[in-house]
Image (cartoon, rainbow, N blue to C red):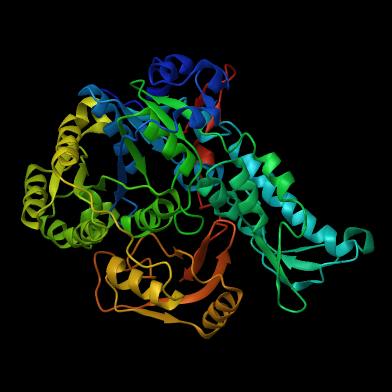
Length: 559
């Protein structure tokens, strides 16, 4: 039996074209490219100005069922679909989120697709790439330093050190940094206070980078960040500390989207956006809008299941970007649906039609949620080698009964070739079905009303219970006039409920909101439900343990 090569072995044997050659083919001028070696580049924002009157291509969002340890293959499907669209003669462009070092070294080992549907150079993309994450980290921590220095230097703004809401960040999972004390060491080291680190991708700076329209909009949004409250309870912003200009300066290159290619030389913009349950979870508005000018069909993705990433894409990103998506692809695997039907991970190799039938309810609810936004839906089933013919037939029939178009794809094993049927069905949807996109709630509604709508319409719950402390925070936001913003739900990705252990499509539950805070710069209200980790820890066996490098610089263990 032939050994199946690992993702990184496949990526290392790929024939890449110089990125300048691919960019030129899609209409990017030589002067608009800022090269980082031969195979990756940033695109200058000058390209926007030149292309502003060019009509937009079609926008397709890839999302998924609720994630399980069995895997869904959302990025793999997004990349495979882009490759397949090019194979059938369409000018497709892919817009993806940027991997983060914390999860790569912790639980994932990589986030650049898989098999024969990857973006390359995958080592670079999964590691430091073009330095965007480092720029976000530096900008965030400059603001942290400015807060503590301001207090140390006399505290002219009368910042209440008990009410500092801005956290430091690092791009690594490190549970020991969740709660720390800063300022130890006496007078010269500032004032002692409790602080904590979050992971870089959960920073509001990341969300701002993803939602800014240009550099000046970025600077303006950074200035609106609320970092603390003064002794009278009034908000103190980054602009009050006079550092938003310096923060924007640190991000002047990071705001430019990164262009790379797939294994089949389809162009992909990779820019910003992990963490759908805190920071926003979609790639940058700039990258998506640029891709729409350069491609006839743009395939983009949102983090986690449709109830998290896609909901934020449609209620936050599209609202701010004035985007009107044309279709949604919901990715599922038979393995994951069996888990939603109650099968243990160790038993997924066995045929289980009953569990698959039961687990289908999760897929059905995610599809229904997308339809509520007025969007046509295609279900993409990412095929695994141990899926049986009976299981495939059952799932296809279930989709047919539900009235949703479905396609089986083998993009992992066969690249673009394995996604041709999916691409053809998507093109047919784009040509025959109209999008009637609209957000699910009115942004002018009260915070409790917006929360209730999300819970009932998207999660399938009975409503929302808001803790007294969270209600107090809501009242505060109402007083400050900051309540008329979209909602960014911080909820577990594993369940429609706020309990990660409840799989499938439960009914009769309520969502508990225990914390409400405003990301005034990003332009949304974060509502925390359950125990959301903004600084995850490493698992017992971190992915980093399987990684290595040899004397020739060849990397192994990234996957």
